[in-house]
Structure formats: C-alpha cells, structure tokens
Length: 602
Image: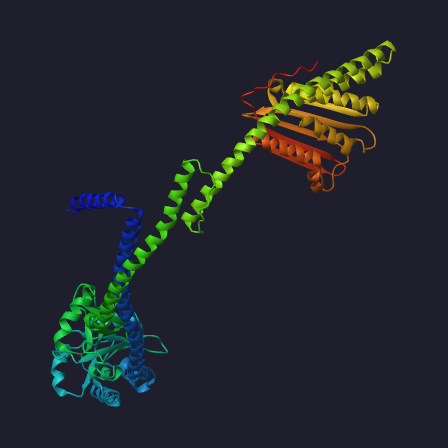
C-alpha cells in the first residue's frame, strides 16, 4: 500500500512544481511563502500541543514523585517499631534460651516455654495496633502462633499436625536474606480472602554464636498505609495510589502483579493492574518510587485524559493563533513579493538598455541580494569598458617589449665579443691564469643569460656552478673543495634557471669566505619518482638566526620564483648550525613539457 501511495505523491509534487514554474516570479514567491507559512504554522501547532501535553505529564510525575518519597518515608516510620521489636528478641536471653534449648519432639513448645513465648509475642502484637498476629518457629520445627483474632488459629493448625512449616517457600526466601527483614505483600501463613494483611519474616540468628535459631513472622493490617497517602484525590478525579510487590522472587513479569495495597476507585483496579503489567501506558500515567525497606514500588496513577484537558484548551488557542498567523502571512507574502520584484524590474530595464548599446547606467540599486546583482552588473559593464582600454594599452606595451627583447639579444653578443678579446689578449701575453678566468666568466654569463629561457638543463646549471667555483678558487688560490654528486639520468632534464648557482654563491659569501682555512661545498642531485632532489651543503661558519636568512632578498627571490613556476608541488628547506655549516634542500617536480631550447655549456 505504501509503495502505491509514494508514486502518486511524487506525481502530485511534480505537477505542483511544474505549475509553479509556469507562474510569474512574483506569484512564485507569494505562493512559496504562503505554503511555507501554512506548513510551519501547522507543524508548530502540533509540536506545541504535544510539548504542552508532555510537559503537563512530566510536571505531574515530578510533583508526585516527591509525594511518593514522602509516603515512603512515612511507611518506613510505621515499619520501624516492628523491625526494632523483632531485632530486640535477639538480645532477650529468655527468648534465645527458649529457641535454642527446646527439647520437644513435636511441633509444640513445652508448656513452660509456650507460656514464655505467649508473653513475648503478646507484647509485640500489643505494642503496635496494626499487628494482627505473630508466629515464631525454631530450627527444629517447634512453633508458637499468637493472634488477636482467635478464629485464625485454625488456619495454621495443619503446621502442628501434618505439614512442616520449614519447607515453605517464604522460609527459603528469608534464609537467603540472612537475618534481614523480608516483607511479603500477602499473608504467608494462610490464604486471606480479604487480603487485608501483609507479612514480615525474619531469620533469627544468635548474635553470639551466629547460628540460626528459627524464624519470626509478623502479620500486619494493610490499613496502616492509609496514613501514608493523605487525601485520596488531591484535586484530581482519577488520582489513585497503590503499592506493588515487584521483587523477582514474587513476580516474574508475566503473572498478575502482586498487589499489596490499593487506594482509589475499585472499579478501575483490574484495568490499571493489567495496563501496568503489560507496560502499555496508553490510558494511565504512572509515577513510581521504590521503598528501600520493603523493596515495594509505591505508585501514583492517573488517567491521561484528565491531564490532557488543559492541553486540549492550549490546542484550541494554538489553532486560532495559527489561523490568524496564516492570514497575516498571506498579507506579508504579497507585500514582500512586490518589494522583491521592484528591483528585478529595474534590473531588467537596465539589461535591455545595455543590450541596445547604452552603456551609461543611471539606475540605482539597494543593498539587497537583487540590488547587489544590479550593482555587480553595473560594475561589469564599467569593467568591460576599462578592459577594452587596457587591451589597447597592452598591445602597445607588447610592441615595446619586442623591441626591448631584440635589444637584450644584441647586448650579450657585445659582452661575449669583449670577453673573447680579453681572452685572446691574455693568451698572446702568456697570462694563462687570466685567460682561464676570463673563459670561466664568459661561460658563467652565457649560461646565466640562457638565451632568455626560463628553463635550463641540469647539466648546464651544473656547468655554471663549476665555472663559478673555478673563478672563486682562482681568486682564493684553491681554498675551496667542490664535491659534485649528480646522477647522470637527470642531466638532460630541465629545471627553473638561476636557483642552484645563487645558493652556491650565497654559501661562498656568507659561509666560506668568513671561515679561516679551507672550505668545502657539495652538490648532490638525484631523481625520486616524479621529483628531482638537490642537496647543497657547505662546512662554513653557519647561521645563528635562520629568520635573517629568510629575510634576505636572494633566498626570498628564489622561493618566489619557484612558487610562481612550480605551484604548490615543491619543497625548499634551509638548515644551519653554527661552526658546522649550512644545507639547502630542493625538491622540484620534473618538467614534462619543455618548450625552451637546450643551452650549450661550451
């Protein structure tokens, strides 16, 4: 059935959306806001009704939870004399003597001991008016029953004649408690048709020998609980109190709940117990508090319909308020839709004017979303006009750049010719050292200019470093050792020009020239996957503050050029230790498409 409804619902939604698209924007805004307002009001009304109903129930439960705690304390006070009387027997030497030294072989105590027990039990029963009867039995099965109502004596006679009272289930339960008082919601000695008594059973343990002497049973009228609950209704018609014995030893969760006490209309009792047992809570609301002394649950119950009366009133108020809100939302939706459409109309007219070639926009737009679109459109038109002018200026600058490039290609030839003349003059005058230095300087300039290309072969960058180191060693009479360890398989790959040689020059200037004695510079290069790794290190004086190195123009320029060319897929790292040296590490992506022509190192 659900699968049949879903396609129908989807079809209805598609028709509604299609119909909405056919409306004007103004009507779309109006009906969208109206529908949202109706749905919001409906959902809000339902939520308010449910929350108000739930809040009333929670408030009622919280209030009566405190009342139940007070009732539990009153019950504890009522049970305290019984508990103290039973515990007082353990310190009564006469009672202990009777319980442990009885020699009778039948279910009766001896006449002498019987009189003693009659006096003791009589005092207990007389002490508390609610106590109906008392029974004591020792470990041998000798027992004494005392009651205010002599007609109940015959109901326990079978224990004297045939049945062994120590084999009853309540004896086992009391034994498991090991001397702690155990409360049963019914009379454990005999079936009580009126069900007007509950039993307290206690295993009697000698406080000195710690041996079991027997058991004590006190049967008490349930009418004593009436004082614990005050008035019956407390301002409510269906308000009721009850006490349930829900201990696992007495109730398995499926059998009828053992009812200890019920205070309220009797005609609803069975329905309440059935509802509570099956955990339905459809008709009634429960508040429960467990009494620690007895283990019983003290429960307040009330019909939910009585509590929901006020929430129904709130529901009607919410409905009337919702209808008023929906009517007001229609008015607001119409006003807002008109307000939104106004700048749209202005924007439409502006676009039409620009389309006709009128670029002078006089319309003014506000700061709303549509107004921002209008202002951006005005800015776009203005930017297009400015862009047209800039394009003209760019074309002029491109022509100028071509002339400058031609000039830059001419000047290096003049420089190379001059260096060649110096070289040959040095050879003619047998100044071999000078000739060699001039040749190294010429190679350095050629490789640095790189015919104007951004990229350079690794082998040419290495050749440039070699030429530079050759010049420095000639200046400083061979003070510097140059160690080269670059893999052959990367020599024909290209990298960004002018990034390795400046680092070597920086190491020479800041690290080795300031050092006494000889120095060493090493250059290592290899390939790892799609990356080239270069490690340049020296054993110079080192750098104390690396921040100063990063502030330098040379390092900052290298980083910026690498970032602009390679993007984010690179690593540049500098480390230094004073009097040990400095190391620079470059990890650069391999350039896969190379447009620059190779540079010769000769």
